Image 1: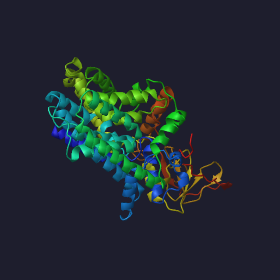
Image 2: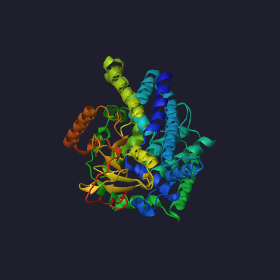
Image 3: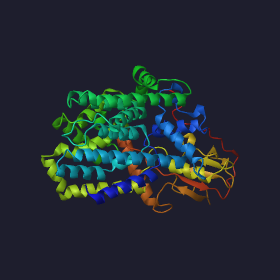
Image 4: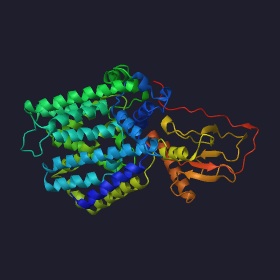
Length: 499
């Protein structure tokens, strides 16, 4: 392992945990932070996602967020944004432990040249730190599963699996925690259990403590669910019934069986994601008896059989896929290409992208930095006029200010604020208070060019290309006289109604 590369990775990981404020997908926030915010009395019940009323989501991760929120109430100036940053720090720490333990596992089994190539890929693949800091069901379940796997497998390949001590028991508990974090993780758990039974032929005594830990962990998880919903409930069955029996998930979208061949590469991480995807397929063929194959392949096939597909569904396999790349191509011409000048240029660009995403991450979908700026800047008496923009759809992140439509012909008083995606002031004399554009009021030509390219790509390739745009918040210094007051805007959160 290259210590300088590892140090760079750790630094990027924790900087990303601070700066990567936006969730990759709304559920990352809605299914965790909003649940916890409701429990501490901030989010009204009617603004929770529909899954809360349906009682089909586990409360394990919201319970962790709840404890952090309660603790932060003792810290002056701390708010929900502080809580979110700490949660990302927890996710980063868990992923760092998982990565370290998995590398220790592979380092004892792979040739030194293969192990060095594994480390080089994991520490420079830009998607690894980005996914590692997500306090989401996908991110935390992956870290918990990986740590559990390394606790249940011997440190050296010539050793039998451990059957006594705290390691196997804790491994079972962490497998349960991974399941309670994300129910779909049962596919990875089942694949791993099948490998232990059919390939490794683990002795019967090595199953006792992990099984006990798994049962105890799930019992604790169901107790947490009862606390969250205020009565005894079995969310896992409700989740299966709603999404698979009643087909609720398929109402969101339906994709072809082969959609996971292109969904994971429709983003800025296309190159390393494509290498990891192809490497995984090659790894499964060349190493059919490896535990990584049994962990990844059943989940990949299972998710492919389900009509509704999202790239985040395969995120828990991302770390195993990254570790599979180097072993997949050992002994082939592809493996020797890693030392060419072209490979070094390509992965140098990836390292630059990884660092760039840490310093100024691309904010997909929801605009949490904007919500943070508005919540911390504006008070209950302030009014924000929305032009062609919106603040946030997350109840816990919304400030106390009121919102109105920035309609033509209506009055805008002095001292009010206007939120717009325009490149310049919406009214004469308006002062810029906050902008998402990283260069402030400079380089407007570059901003317009990037916007044009992004819009053209989105029109060609559809929603697989994320929209690009920058909002600005302006304070009105010269009132606009109008014939009528601008209409009020009603706050509408997302995903509160069952599809």
